[in-house]
Length: 207
Ligand SMILES: [Fe+2]
Image 1 (cartoon, rainbow, N blue to C red):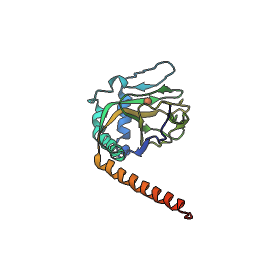
Image 2 (cartoon, protein in one colour):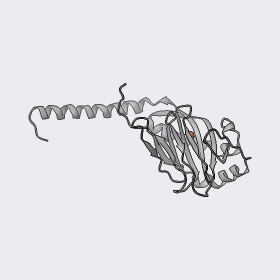
Image 3 (cartoon, rainbow, N blue to C red):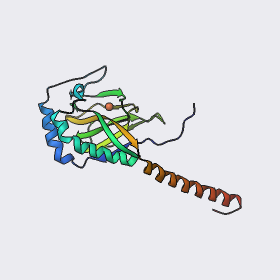
């Protein structure tokens, strides 16, 4: 099997309303009943995955509009017109908690780091091209997105700090044709330059 060389479209950007919502999100999560959803090696302190399609949850209603606006920035960057939020849920990790290797549905997934510091368990991914593991270097308030087929996990939380994230399954949709023609122009410009360069070299030109 042959493989095209490509870079992974993994994007990370600060959620600009993070400081506005953080405390409120944390108190919403504190009020939620303790729901564990642990399979095999997973040990997650609190999670509301079983309600991930309920968009009437108070914390979801609070941030939905701004989160969607944030996702549209990624859509714009990758040449899509829209982004649908299919599922949204929070997860909390106390000391020793972990989430083992898994993938998601829909075309993109990701992590919003709501309560997080540099010593917290990182998100580890397996690069599907190189098969290498890579840890996402994120700060609190960052939202990272990556294609849903990327195998990933949360490492073990080794410190006494309630790592809190919001995860999601989203679908980018609607091809932005202006974006495609813009990139096509760039590609043609590059090819023209390359052809010029090789013609010049073949005709005995120096670099
Ligand atoms: Fe995940």
